[in-house]
Amino acid sequence: ISATVPGNGQRDLFNESVEETGTIVGSGGWANIIDKYAKAKDYCNAPFEVRHDGSRKTIVPTPGEWIGDARNGHPGRSRRVDLRCESATAIEFPSDSFDAVFTDPPYFHNVQYAELMDFCYLWLRRLVDDAAFKVPSTRNEGELTGNDTMERDLTHFSLGLSQVFSRAARALKPGGPLAFTYHHNTFEAYFPLVAAILDAGLHCTATIPCPAEMAASIHINGTGSSVIDTIFVCRSTATNPDAEQSTDSLRELLANDSALLQAGGVTITKGDIRCIIHGQLARWAISDLRATWDREAEMRKKLGRVVAWGNSPRIKQVLADGFFVALGQDESLSKVAAKGRRRADARVSF
Picture: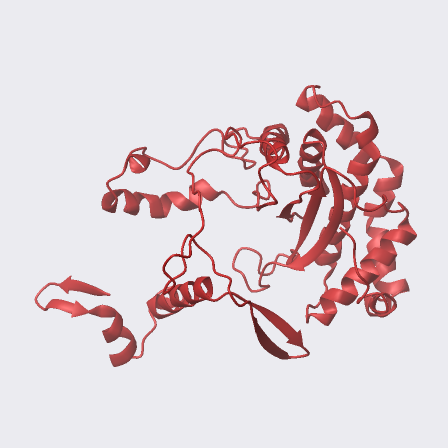
């Protein structure tokens, strides 16, 4: 990376800062940024999986696979890649054209993407001569995040998610999965997911917890927040029967999930348990409300049904602090996980 420095002409600032002074400047430094970019491009050319064996990691190549429209060094081998800068709430795709849909929606009001992006955008506008950079800000009334200042509430979030999921569901081939991740400390933030999945006519066939954050991340460090996301797997047809809905069955699910996470080296916290429970309860809600769900009803009314379900005595009991205390003290999580570890290798149908 070169730059013109007053009085010194053209200088290679990257090499100077790293090689001559040994200094890494900024958040991670240019050295890390460039190294990550190079590794990402290498991964595109030769993707791989990682197998964990205790503390050891083994790279497992996927021969013949690549990511992108063409594979570097292999002329004649290409595939179609379609990138669009459009709103997912309005875009149309042909019916039965997707094998699968994978997405990562905003986690309600956890991150204000436009407000954060504006810092970078103001600089990019000065560098990029393109119509997409003519607007003064990235902020948009239709952005699918909760935002009190811009009066974007759960209803706004629910309407947008419903439009996105419904369009994706129409484009899926029969039985194809729509999978996405989600994470929030409050159970109410999961209600829009329930409404959107039901509006799309989908079944939630699995909720799978997985590590998604580093505990040292600046925006969650010291907050007691979970580092665990839930992967929701949804299909137009159910591939497994609805799970039993009881505190005992939830304990068993927690035991199994905890065993798998601990086997992967994750230390489970109370915040993690809370988010895992939220994901499981969202799946219960979808199962309970499906038979009488009216897709054509006003969103506030539909959301009200989910709220009423979440406020029922049975669900409030599960969410009560006493449940977490009982899980953590009466039967320690390590003991619960030990019970679940016997099932850790069992195949999960989803």
